[in-house]
Structures are given as C-alpha cells and as structure tokens.
Image (cartoon, rainbow, N blue to C red; front, side, top):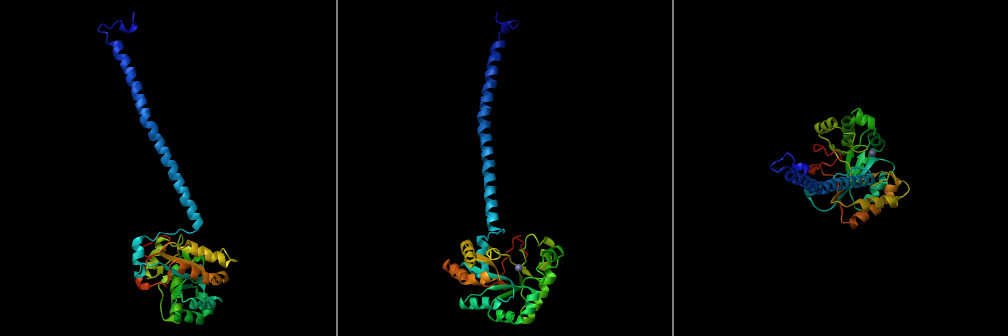
Length: 282
Ligand SMILES: [Zn+2]
C-alpha cells in the first residue's frame, strides 16, 4: 500500500508533495544560475579595481610628486593662449651660479622665473637687479626654507611678505607669486591658505620635477627627465640653481622647443591656480 495514500481519501497528498520537491529543486538551480555569474562579476570587478589602484600607485611613485591634471578649460584660459607653454622655475637663489644661468638664458633668448630666498638676496642684490632688468619673473621663496617654521609654526605669509619687500626695494615691484619650499602639500593647510589669500599672495607648485637634486652628477639625466616628462600643453618645471642644472639648460631648452614649447614667465594679470592641494583661492 502506498503509505502516502493512507488517510488521504482525496489522494492529493503524494501528487502535491512530489511536484513541490521538483519546484524547490528548480528554484535552487535557477537561483544558482543567477547568483554564480553575479558572484563572478563582483569578484571580477573587485580584482580589476584593485589592479587599477595598483597602477595608479605605481605611476604616482614614479612621478614622486602628485601632478594635478590641467583640464582643457584651464589650458584654454592659460595666459590667453592655447599653445604649448613651458615655465622654467629656478629655486633657492640667488647663488654664485645665478649670473651664469642668466647668461645662458640670454644666449637662448628664454625668460624664466626665479624664486628667491631672503638671505641670498641680501648677499647679491646686484644679481637680483640684473635679473629684473633682463625681464625674468622674481618671486619669494621664504627666508628660512624650513618646513616646521613655515608650515607648523605658520610663518609662510610673514616670511613671504618680508621677501616680497626685499624684492620690491631692488626691482620696484612687489611680486605676488610665491613658491612653497617642498611644495604646497602637505604644508599649506586650509588656514594657511586663507592667510595667503588675505595677503593677496599666490602659490605655484610644479608639474615637472627635473630631479636635478637627485641627478647631481648628470646634466644629461636632468635634461632627459624634463624633456621626456613634458607632455602637457602647460608645464611648470622645477629647477634648482645647481651646476648640473646650469649645464643641462641648453639641452632642456632645445628639447622643449623641439617638442613645440614656447617659454613664458608668470603673468600676474592672468593667474591660474596651480597647487598640489588644488586650493582654488591660491
Ligand atoms: Zn627651494
């Protein structure tokens, strides 16, 4: 006797129960069919995003400094021109090499930007005067060049204003554009940025690190670094007043010209923010 049929006069029990089991089995297979590909897709997405993050990290460590992208709108507005422009920016002068750097720039008919240190200006005021006469842009680069003093003790604006005054006494112009020692990140906090804005000063970092502080014995490597990294419509090139940089200068200028760059100096009337922290008020 069919045990399922006992006590079930309508005979519905077994017929009901068997299709129910099949129904659950079908549902299970259906769910598996939906969930397995979904799970696979989620794992795939996770793996590719981790790979992308790894790629971004390796690019950043290669460049050593974060380089904000100059989007198209910015470039179109940049000093009113759309051509490729390179800004050569020399830090930490004036030094014993400044006269030779000025001579080299003159020979190549190129204008540059110099970010000067207060005590160095006192030592060579005449060099600063000839820098201005030659048409280069001169901006403050602090007195101490000391990270803790400038950023932790918030002396950025007071120091830059004093150097601005020194430059004004020699050139009759109070420059607005400053270059933060070690770059704006992470030193320039929101509150320092506000002080800078209130003092009507500006800040420019760089888009290309020439690595002249690293390639101390190789002018060739310095030049290669700058030329190979110059890809954007606008490049701000970090240079220091060092022998290898002076030696690399003709190759840098020639290489950038070959890539279609013109050389320009900062124009206070057409300021475009360019700092690693992306403060729009600097
Ligand atoms: Zn410096």
